[in-house]
Image (cartoon, rainbow, N blue to C red):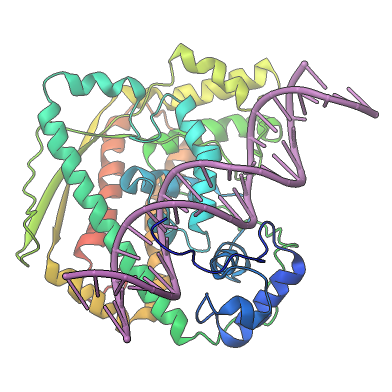
Length: 402
DNA sequence: AACATTCTCAACCGCCCACTA
DNA sequence: ATAGTGGGCGGTTGAGAATGT
């Protein structure tokens, strides 16, 4: 290739790490910090490439890693952020504290992607697969414009996520002695960390509907037989999809960064794939239902709650940012790193819990999603996306999120 | 019980970017 | 301006586990 390998690979060990190697790496980093990864293996007495050490540390040995099943809230966050950011796993991981990009990527590829596909949702675009027709009806131009806008928004979020990472790194390196680490980081070979109790989640309405369908089903005594760990907080989650309305007023200043104020007004139109599709009925079995009656109960609950899916909603998002604001935020990082974790958590919580109260009310009341769900759907999603983007875009310089 | 198939996820690979000399 | 280096990211692989026949 065009460049030399990251290290001399002759004689270096590959493959799974042994507990002894893990311990060596842990001990070394605990004592000295990682410093230069390239130099680390020899100093630590490891027959490994520096890159391999780095990966092992980041993806497995780091003490602030949460392992085990993804909670429903985490699944929702991943799906939502993936809709926004695409396969930018590190950016997504920024908003899932204690989860690594690798773990998120794996989970997406092995679970969530398949699940969305089964529901007839394109895991790449997060649109119903039969939505392709929509772009062939003469509105492709505006759709393309909107796609462009979305890409900008996505790129900007990624850039800001990068700032978070960078500031984190600065924080980490400034504490590289790792003295704040627990004296004995949990052995990765013994890690079976239990999930924290599920927090009431704020989610898109399709997710809410799914929850409703599940909770109804499980409350009727089926929680233990749903398979795939469904009895716990590992729920099968659908997602909403984002499409773009035609009457968008993109006023996005995409000039080459001149520092002028730029305003983006984006209207998202969300529509959920229909779960009445016969095609999907067979799929329910594959999700682990033991017998026909359980399956039927679950389907009924789900279908009832998903009956709003013909509704469409629009929402407006006003986003304002400037090159100056990004700089300000960047500068601010260096002074307020300590708040990052809190702020990120706040962002995640915002994603998840913003509407928890409303949700608990509606869940408790067993409301019929069909009646009035259109406006709820509108409001929830509007609030949801506005919350995200307002937070992201207009967080003042004293905000430490980005 | 034995074998085949599918699934999971830790680890690797190659590329890219930022930094520096 | 250029090349070398380190670090990071996303895609892919493959061994072991789980499940099915």
